[in-house]
Image (cartoon, rainbow over all chains, first blue to last red; front, side, top):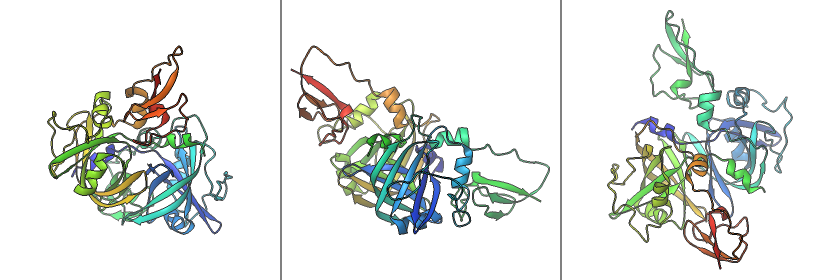
Length: 205
Length: 205
């Protein structure tokens, strides 16, 4: 199988937040689709190692902020590149709350969906949640950010290899996991956060 | 709830085909995402009234052709605007077959995924299938067609209203269902094929 075939699936980019017993957390995801109407339902897939996934299983609710083309890398980094187990991502920002008291983004966001989970299925690496959309708001007239836009316009380009130094390992830029060895297999997936080899940076001796 | 919030979810556009006891059928869908890795799994949502949905439940396999930006309205019309209950959509075209003998598009398509269904959930209007990706091929270097591209570049624009004649009904352009009455409610959904009010055309007296 050519895994690159999967890169041709199209996605949006979202900030997915939940709150359980007063503790809010959020992450960045790109896998959400509407799956039914009357009632309106969406499906969202979340990495099992994400703290947001743990909290969603307990709270039964989430808010999805649909990021728009004005989204900056800082926003992606804040919600996507650190874990809510280590930092409170909502500590120093004031955000609007949906009807379940879950925060959503009031900026860089074209729409929000407020959702109530009706079922979930553990698929090994990820859990797939199916949820009823109980509220929705349009927040800007800007175009939704697609995952392809994120890859080409927002994500920083990898630095050029420093040919003069020996590579002794590879560090996941997302979760800082370290792979020991000079060559990272091309099909390597981070055992901690599930990101691909292209999200690793070399560690020089 | 503002239903327009849901219009900001981003999608690709796909030709979804299956084959059961020698009978192949395919339809157009925009709801497919990767939901897990190791093994690689996708989720796809299909309208319950679609003949393809019936066949998928029996065959347990499908092939997804990921349409690219060269896709024409004729292709969408052929697979999306007629039912396999009335016509054999594969009768006069010669297509490659995947390892399950299911046809996929050899043109206007940037990639294909060959899938084996592992579970399904009936959500009322649609069934959500979760499937393992058993094969994948890249077929062109063209950009994937997004649903937003389809709406703005490929779908024909609605004709201007003929102000001089009285409207007596509305016909669904997708499945030909007829709504009787001069004004079609804006939030109307076709009870037969699930398309929105904007896919209806007026019937004049």
